[in-house]
Structure formats: C-alpha cells, structure tokens
Length: 371
Image (tube, rainbow, N blue to C red; front, side, top):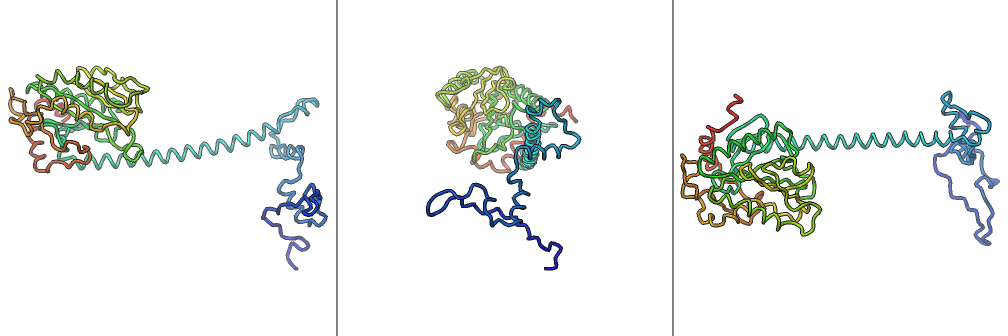
C-alpha cells in the first residue's frame, strides 16, 4: 500500500527453514543450494546476502580490507598477493580483541568478588572484636590479648588475636607479627616468674565447615604448664604429630620451627604449629582438613598432663604472688565437644578473671609504652 517501502517485502529476522535437498519418495538429490529453488523470493535472497551467505573467500577478504581502511597495508609485490596472510591476521586480531574483552570482564568480576569477600571479612572481624571486648586484657595497635572463655585449660589460658582479619600467623603483616611476638615475650616472663612455662598453639585451616574459604582469623592459644612437667611437652607433641593425619602425604610430617612458624610453612597452606616458650617448636602441614582433629592441640596438652585433670578448678591461683604453687593450673570441662560448640563461661566469672589477670600482667605489659 502507501508505505515508503512500496514494492518491497519486510525483511524477517527469523532463521531460514531447513532446505529439503532430497526427494522423500525416491531419495534422489534434487537441490544442492538454497537458491536452487526457483520460487525463492527477492526478499529471501536479499536477506541471505545480508547475512553473508554465498560469499567467497575473496569476498570476506575484501570486507576485511574495507574495514581496515587506510590502516590496511597490501602485499609488497605481486607474488606476495598469493601468499599474503593479512586476512588471517585481521581475523586473529578480531578474535584477540574479543578474548581481551572477555579476560578484562572476568578480571573485573573476580575483583568485585574479592572486594565483597574482603568487606565480609572486615565486618566479621569487627563483630568478633566487639563480642570479646569484655575479655580483653591488653590492646595494641594491631593485636590484642584476651582470656579464653570457651573451656579454658587453666586460669591463665589466654589468646593473642589481631584486631582486623588476618588469616594466619604465617600470612600476617610484619607489624601484626611483631605485636603478637611482643605479647608472647611478656607472657613468657610473667609465667616464668610464677614457676610456669607457656605452650603456644596455632591452627590455621583454609576451609570452613561447608568447604568454603574459612573466615576464621589468626589465633595463638597461650597455655601455661608447670615448669617441672613442661620439659616433657616437646617429646609428647612430636610423637602425637608423627602419628596424626594421613599415612601418605606430600609434605614432611613434622617441621622444626625453632619457636616461630613464620618462614617455615609457606603461605596458603593449612597447618598446626606449637611453640615451647619461644625456644623450640614444631609445625605440621594439614593436607586433609576433613580428617584433621580440630582439637588436636588442646587434646595433646591434656593427654600429656592427664594426671592434672583430677585437680580441676585448682588448689591455688596461678596468678598469685610468686613463688606460687602451680600444680592446679589445669582445669578442663567439656571433653569431647568441639571447641566452637562449647558454651562460654558466665560473663561475671570471666570479668573477675580478666581483672585478676590484668593485675598480674600489668608489670609486663608492653602496650603501656604506647600511651
């Protein structure tokens, strides 16, 4: 009718129907190409041409030359015309641009995911610190010292943790590791004056319970042991490590750390580490987290000194004026229950313990130099 496209049929964007090239009755081939059909309309032929149907290699090469415009450099000689790979190079260049675009898109997606994860870790660290403020004994710029409120092994059981999220002691920044070691040195001197020696435990597992990356942060457990029995702890831990975990493993069963796991276990690995008053220590790379006993360190301490469990709740306060008897250092409830599922001690009891521990720690507290 009276439209601007009189005499022309509207072009369809639908894919053409499959061409029947064989006679259904005789099975003989009756067509070779789509345009063998004499009844094909002008619009269908034009639509096929617009999609590039029927174009030869020379046609495609000419299209590439036209797209390149002035940037196109032809063959240097007539003989090169037949050996020229310019069309192939232009095709590969277009594929390369598409690959670069996909790579950049993937990198941007990974970056966004990493930022979301980091934000979640920061929120988790802030929440964790706020929930444990009442347990804090001393606060540095990057690290704090708190009492253990979940099934503590003795009245002097404390934990060194970073304020912000840090996956492990191995992966900690230098300023975080320095403050953590300052706390360890102060605790060693404090308990040595009371006839006790410290065992430091750290466990870093990369995966959480659901197999996803763990949100747990670095935590160094500090457990005081009577000096007369602490001498046996290295041998007991060495035996326990050699007997734990998989029978066949890619790593050594045990590494001698000299008291510090940093520089011994590479970053990115799950591991367990124990240090004895910063003078000696062992590390073990955990290869199968599903089979690893998450209470390995605590149970080894209790197993090495199981005779003390009968002295639960202690006959004397380990933080009393030196020289104090420390036979009653060990106390333990909730054996067999995973640490994360054990209920914390009552708030009032923990507040009283924090006050007592703070008074005993004050003469050794390095954070007082910060004020």
